[in-house]
Image (cartoon, rainbow, N blue to C red; front, side, top):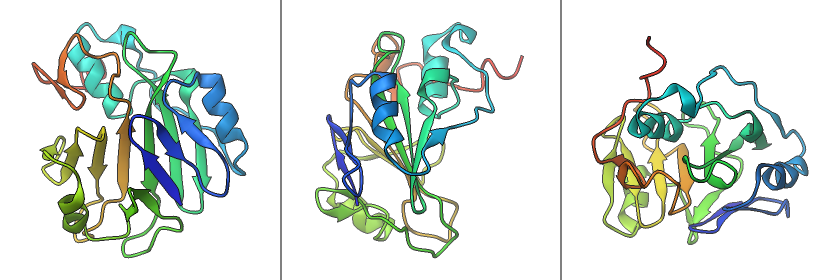
Length: 201
């Protein structure tokens, strides 16, 4: 079981340790290196913060996982659960502030490990049942209305296209990510964002 600890990090299965917010890239990589099958991910993007003139666009690209940072590309797999890590915004590029967890499963296939918050298996129950127990306020999140954020937890839940009615992806953020100059909250920029700026030239 992976256990989410908002504002702390993620407890990994099988005694692999805890990924803690605030860790350096080396510390996070060392924690994940103990997991069989962990590896450096091959990046398909070469976007960096320098490629964005406006913070709000960089924030959106970072939140969507398309900003490139060579030192934060370690991936660990637990059965069909995939964990990736990333650093924060402009003021926290050297510290872990984002952990992504994804169930890499075909439709209607159960995850091999529970991904839990406060005893609730976030991927193991219908999406609406999970949403009902999250502390409010919750709200839909971009890019689709099917996504859900629980800002109090620093949690962003996503699912693969319907008809599957279970969450299959999540992002857990540290409450302070370094994007405060442009954002009203963890998951939204005050003037909106568009992570494609910098890709389309």
